[in-house]
Image (tube, rainbow, N blue to C red):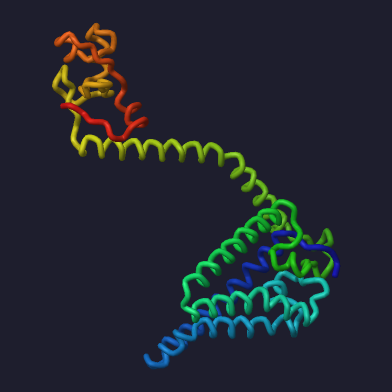
Amino acid sequence: MACQCLRVDQLDAHVLDSEIRTIAQDSVDDIVNQMPVWISRVFEKLRPELKVTLDAVLWTHRFSRGASPGQEQMDIAYSGYSPKLITQHFVMEVFLPYITRRLTDLSGRMEFARSYAKLEAIFELGSLLHFLYFLRSGGHSTLTESILSLRNWNNHQPTISSVNYDNQNRELMWHAFRDVILLTYPFIERIRQRVVKKQKLVRKFGSTIGGSDIECVVCDKSAVIPMIGQKCGHVACYTCVATSGNSMTCSLCSEDKEEQRMDFLAKKLEEDSTILIDQ
């Protein structure tokens, strides 16, 4: 082993392994689809067993070559990847998830299914956090690799004359993309919160007025920037209230010698979605 490989090489190896598995799975599905219907139904029931068998066949490449097909394409391999480690790796990556899910499905008990779902969610969260740490600091590319202390190394020492500048460019582009995401995420999140708040306000507004326009009690037209009386429930345009000379009180109630303070309808809807509007 020459030296520890780049993160982008490890990611490319995982992508290649995934693509090879997908191609093999699609080929098996095509063969099953060409069989009679009753045979296809049998294979459909045994689909989990077919998948784990296909994975086992693909993993035999590791026993014979000491690396996965994707690693071999990227000219990398695990350091000290003995048959014992390969077996342990297969059990943790393929067999253990299969047997746990299969026993849960066959038991038919909801408590087992819920427990499995919680364990799976915890493992997925741990894998995600580990992957984010890997993107930042390098090291083991998956949580299983970290548990088994498997580290990818280059099979040959890179030299200046054989450096793959495409990989270097991709590494630099990934760092730039990551920095752009970290820079723009707070702004995107703030815009998203504003949109969500606006949508909630629109839903409250629509549910309050039943989807119809509110008429101003002063000009008898659709209220523009509507304001509502705090007690009377009358709605009027902001301009009608501001130009009435009644110190932001309801013009209709002022005629009856009862001053009712007006407030913006949008603000009131944010505070209380069960406002009664008096047309």
